Image 1: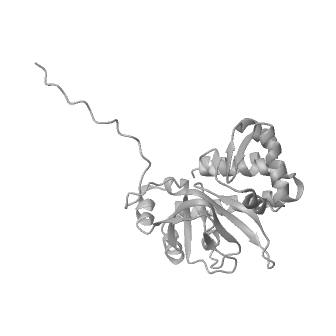
Image 2: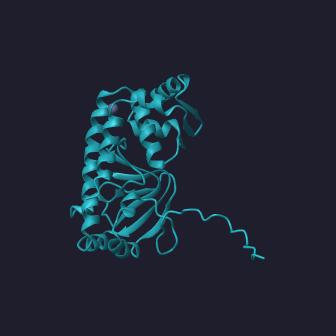
Image 3: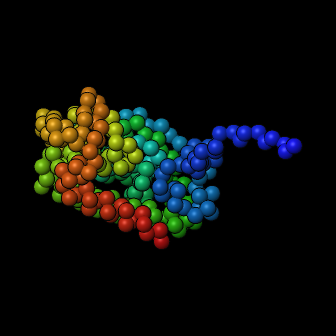
Length: 254
Ligand SMILES: [Zn+2]
């Protein structure tokens, strides 16, 4: 009689790769590195948890660390002496905070802040600079990402000046959802207004319009994308332009 085999345990779930401490890696720059460079870099990374509104650096701070965003959302803000600020960049698991280091600069020109709860792999600034000399792929990817961010800043500057609040809000929600990997984004109108460089009342009106049209559902502190296709149609062309820039960059694995 054939020996009965024990029913196999649960089918093994395919988990994303992990660093040496078993932390799962979602950051797409890290995932795209060749094995040799991964081994060199991963032992120097430390996973950090960033609470909402945690500031990674202020303008003028010396860049002691760089961050590979792993989950959540990090905003890059231009800050003025009177305290006003406007968002000029948005970074999720596709990206990296600390671009000036790659070009040899040691000072932050902007504020970087966790927009929603986030995790990131932190590496010391000087350590990163030393590793880049031995990791050509990493160096190239970070140089390219710096250029992607420069294009994003250019687009967002034009968008903030030329496009209506409801189009910008739609653009912003889509960009955030892509980076978080979820259609539900925990945000308040006040924070959205700050990000879009506009008044809270304007964001409330714009969000009301998008909700009435059935594109989003927003409650206190949470925005849910209900109809992504229509939201894309409602967004200004800036969303598509910036999305294509990232996709082309990610498709080019040279
Ligand atoms: Zn726009």
